[in-house]
Image (tube, rainbow over the protein chains, first blue to last red):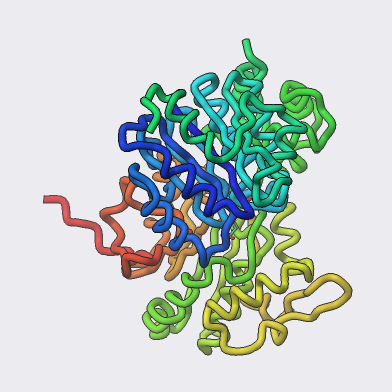
Length: 189
Length: 279
Ligand SMILES: C[S@@+](CC[C@H](N)C(=O)[O-])C[C@H]1O[C@@H](n2cnc3c(N)ncnc32)[C@H](O)[C@@H]1O
């Protein structure tokens, strides 16, 4: 696995903190996260995740290369995409599933770049963003991990992904980081 | 070969057709979002593939207008990125106040939101009567909408919030009329705005400008095209003139960076400095 894309919405901040806490400093794949938040909450989100994670965490910036072992967050009000040369680009195209940034947009572009080397994770959320993108990830040979809707704070997002894309792994939140570690060839924490 | 790889071939041919047949060159647009838009265009027109788009682009004369309308991204807001308007009000307008006449070029104007916002800002600074705003875009469809200045009322809460954060001095409702589900910008705001077609890819310099705003357009361009466009802006500005780009854009990847000076670290506002003398 070279990269991991993560989509989360309602209840996502707590879920992301738990997920990232389970990755150690030797985790090499790039981690790219779309969490729906307002402009106000974003700075707070970056610092919260920084505190919960052994890896460097920063806002994804246009034209910046996607580095291994780094966690990136999509900035509010922009879609985040990955280009073939493995750098980020941003767009202010129309909202997708009523949101911008949209996990669909990130997942679809990342799927094209990393193909079988990509793992997508869909966490708690109260809309259906990410489902189409997840289907594209699987269609191009990537793996999809979906948080069990039964235990998600908001079940709609993982449930929508399951309906449209199915999943390679359906797991409670606590099981996702260990699986990512395994897929990245790390010993479990 | 996977469908997505075949689509990349089709898109390359589509770009070639647009260029050869109509003179529009999308070869330097950032590929990921461009692909999304082209596929969206084909879907919206109920075409099965990008190749069908290409065929129509080549053989159907009038079709190009619909293509440009859809490939352009006329998504904007009144007072979008309000902190930039605060910077303009506090740092830029006072500097421009000494000019008897102020030329402003707003490139990539979408449906006119930014041009009207600028007109309001100038009015509140008492400078509008002396100003001329050239608002340009390469989409005629977007320009026609911009000329009308009509926006859906459901956007009003966002506009009001932006206007407040931009430090607006009046009520936004004073500048527009709300009717049914729409709001229409008042005619007097249009008095000093000229909407015109200008393609940043292929058209040239735009006169003695004191301020250029081009926000959320450069993010769609790859580095070489961004350099071309920034060169255009540099050559269109009077010495000491200002360039304002989007909050997620920067000059640091560009060859023209040396010709500009950043006003403050937090804001994407630059001042054109004198070119360095060649020794
Ligand atoms: C996302 S909008 C930005 C609107 C506004 N400046 C803002 O920040 O809200 C991008 C605009 O750039 C225009 N555009 C794209 N390529 C262009 C080109 N080559 N020449 C002129 N305008 C272009 C599009 O038609 C669209 O209206």
